[in-house]
Image (tube, rainbow, N blue to C red; front, top):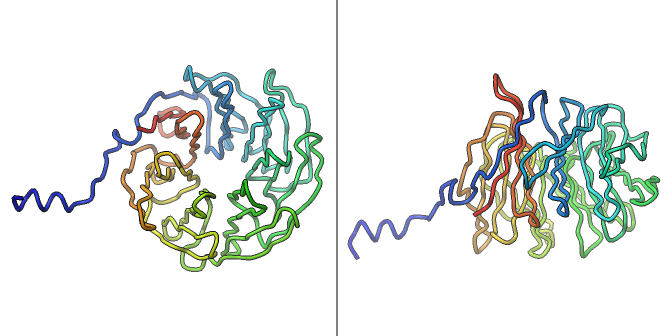
Length: 323
């Protein structure tokens, strides 16, 4: 083997943005001001729901036709979103007035208004147990019955919860609690904290994703900008690596063994999950300043990114096709 060829063979293979994420469509959202918060999807009808927090609206997008379908108005800083596929209902948490509103998925009319959840934030659905969890207040998860929408329980935390993930084959919920500088491990059957994992070195832990099969929890931090990987069996950090700054969403793509990390710095990072607990940021897709909200749907096979209005550019939803 010639020396140059031998040297090239030793270099890591890093894919380009076009290799890993192809921009499939862009959906303009003229008139939408301010920042976005979180997404949900309807995989049956290929609809994308995104909370336009700064605009006090929920934007409904046809992901297949790449067009805006509807705007739900009258919200108060909408944050978390969930879609109940069996009932065809949309659940929206509102941070400003402490409500969780439920809308009909066909005519978008308000069906239920749950109050008393100050600073309501992230929403997660436990489909098997027919339960909705909402992070809120100075530190709690509210458990809502997904059929009656009555609050049936509360799990106390040390401070306001950010992203949290539910095990599907176990009872645990992993909760980012950045102001307490830890991850809370909750038993949702007991509705109690059963452990905490400190976040002293890497702080401001906001987004989170779970690979339950491999017992891995991925946590995005802003101070400094790092991805921290926890072994959920040992309850300890197994790896960490640098990412772009100001992250607010991250998702794991089990099929392609990669992570998508949206960062307000203006990049969508793609992190390859390699053998031997190794991780490599393989791509930085240039997006827009403040575009830190994304959603990956394994069923639809696409990554949606919310780009806020900047200068003379309208807000928009960018739909990427993983290659």
